[in-house]
Length: 364
Image 1: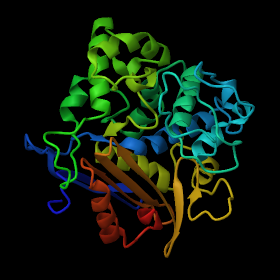
Image 2: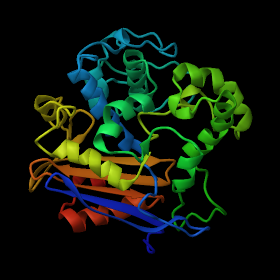
Image 3: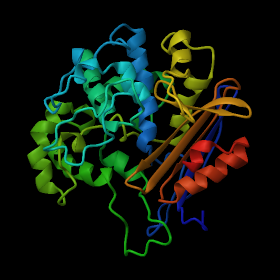
Image 4: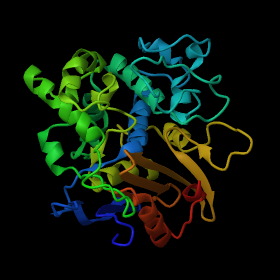
């Protein structure tokens, strides 16, 4: 941690399908020296996506969503552009990243969202697609993202320290991100989501409507008010101040490990994914020539010397780096969350030491 300039890290381990060990190291804010503790909340970044994917598949099991139904059947946001491929994008395409949509538009306030290629023809990692699917979940549940996640997953799984939203209590327990040691700019870097949330919080307080209960229409209505509270460029479109299925989860490492227990263990409770659905989540979903890794539903899959493993990484604002790795055959997993630009270098070393694996994903 000292060598790489990573002030804080949290690690949790799953063995035999259960949370077996967890520990935090270092500080949440290098200048203040606030220690990492067991209840420290980490910005999960793109590790948000597999958690959301799990609940999407719960809705599939319940018959409220269909994997191969067009996404426009459930939600057609006004920011979609004109393309014959729009109608063909399915829920499955979102979860396996074959929508053809970009990761994020450069100018979402003015740039329509359109796919670059026909869905199902190549891998295009897309946060935008997950946000669109989030609006579909809003439509079928009648709830905000956080309300649906809490009802269907968080409460049942014991993930009581998990939220895609924001409030003063979450802010107080959340880590801050840090630059790499060779970045000599003074002071703390821009904090990404924290700054956007802080601009929206006064609006939520005035409305007496917590951010965790906002749906897209609420964020649209709040946009000009939040912009007035924000630095230029921080709040550009409604999704900047809306709980985001692709990136805004914050949780303890123990809570994320609880999610991993659902993914890697083979004896589900009645509310968990059906065995066939879980198997589909962890099975390759598209065959494309020249691919070095496979796409499951919400997870990446890589062949290793011990067999296939599932994994996902996360990076928010370049200063929050996270990683989760699972071995379903052995019911094992590890979760690592950091608060620094070099956190990805650190988590690679931890995975190598703890699991004995040097993933090809680390080099690309």
